[in-house]
Image 1 (tube, rainbow, N blue to C red):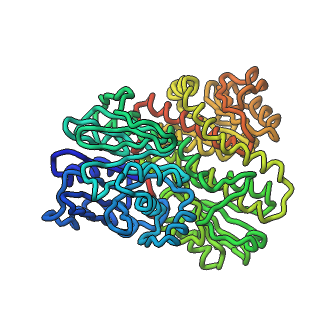
Image 2: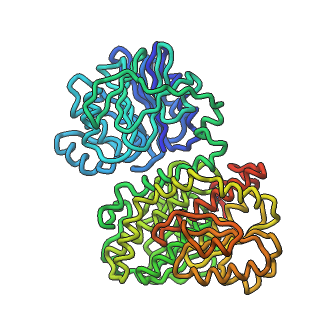
Image 3: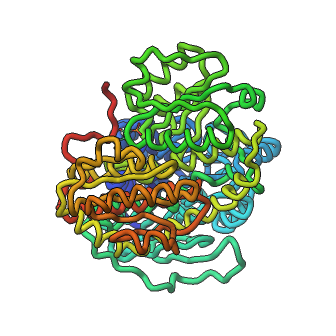
Amino acid sequence: MCGIVGYVGDEEALPILLQKLNLLTYRGYDSAGIAVSHNGNFYVEKAQGKVGQLEQLIDYSIASGVVGLGHTRWATHGEPSRLNAHPHLDCSGRIALVHNGIVENFLSLRTQLEAEGHTFRSETDTEVLVHLVEKYYDGNVTKAVQLALQQVEGALAIVVLHKDEEDRLVAAKMDTPPLIIGLGRGENHVASDIPALLHYTNKVYVMEDGEVATITKNDVLITNFREAVQPRIYERRVMVIDWPPEVAQKGGYPHYMLKEIHEQPDTIEDTLRGRLLEDGHTDIPDLHVLPEEIRAVQRMTFVACGTAYHACLVAKHLFETVLRIPVQVDVGSEFRYRQPIIGPDEWVVAISQSGETADTIASMREGREQHAKVLAITNVVGSSVARLADGVIFTRAGPEIAVASTKAFVGQLIGVYLLLLHMAQFRPHAHADELQAMAGELPRLAGLVQRLLEDQAGVQDIAGRIAQQPACFFIGRNLDEPIALEGSLKLKEISYIQSQGYAAGELKHGTLALLEEGIPVICLATQPNVYDKMLSNVQEVMARRAWTIGLVPEGDTGSQHLMDDVLTVPRTHPWLSPVLAAVQVQLLAYHCANALERDIDQPRNLAKSVTVE
Ligand code: AGP
């Protein structure tokens, strides 16, 4: 989510750091900062906004040093602001730290550190890390970082600069966020993403979970904070990167959309992290809803636009089934103009990746004016949607660059599951076993998505054939219907093929007239409770000699004999199948558009965030 850069060598660090930060700006961020050190002169500057604003604040007459670090922040904890921007400093102002990721136990750590006399300046989770390093520093910053990280739960990458050891940087990685060391001649670099390194070197060392790197201009010593190992020179095979810079920005993928589809296992893990507890309980501090409010709510309205609207439809099925709360769902552009009736004890829940969609924001305001509690599931801390809501579930998908929303959508579904589990703790319902089973499956979901991503041959083949067709239909029932709509939207918006998503039972009420021989129909059938009905709908489609493509759980036998082609998803709790089906329809749309050589990341006529009506 955030961008990290560092440099140790003989050149002035500042211009190198700024150039590297500019090479990371494609990732999306809300603030930036740098720290350099030279002969005990420790210079730190940071700014809300873009790197350009940071450059205007820097005093170049004193910002000197051959060691330094920099950061572009994508907020996860704490509003975008200069105070919350990185680097963060310890109490003494002698240690600077930049961070990417999530510190799950930051509240307990902050309480403990404040009790020990540490003074905090920001509202970020990051700041606990630099105070921990300060706490354990005894003249060896590498050792202090190792001891500090042994206290931390979460997933993070950090780089630390200590004023008293200004010939080195210490980098460390815990779990997912990437950290890569660039190996130069008489200088070394570190960054959260390869594009920031390629201008200086193509020899990289990709750090692994638990590793701590002490980086000087001539050496990189690797140790591990999880186990006492002897420091060693990096001996793992150094990677030589031969990507051109524009490909490197996409992590080696040909398009941001494919990169972001592949980031979905991380999105699932990051969005669940620290919120899904043992036995299905949840901890969602940003939600700010009281148990009595949950018990009292009489109706919920989910409102969104486009792909986010499809997440609302999944929510409707689940909340009405489990909590027996009446749920209405609307697109933002309609909700605000249909004189909605919102009574007391009703909630409006907005879902938005960007948090800046005008129609969604206006719908939230409509709810506010009618005194509803307004909640949000969004991907952007500090966005208009986040600020307008009484409580928020942040989806932690990181910046989504491609116009077609993929990882943010899966993050929204995870947000819906978390909200359902959270509310179910405080409202009587008759689905305790089902919810427990679903909650038990959630930690496996990222791995199941990863399995889908590792075998795309089948979906790619079918996509190549659909690319030759003039139209494509997606049909499904119950929880498959929202994904039928989503698959159709994905296909339309990046391949430009005519497409419709439909409730399968509705086909015979008119749309069936459009089916002709060979027209592809994606038949989603992951839901056991409507499986037989779905197969009947498939028969209707086959009777018109259309091309039927099943999207079914692995091992399904009914579809194998009935449909022309079959795409499968790993078996999981049926309530979670929308996540896996979503990945398949995303891949179908992507490979179809790719076969047609479309402008996949920037489709014609579309914008990433629709901030106008
Ligand atoms: C989805 O692929 C589209 N880019 C679009 O429908 C999008 O979902 C919609 O504009 C809503 O955007 P938001 O989630 O940022 O509010």
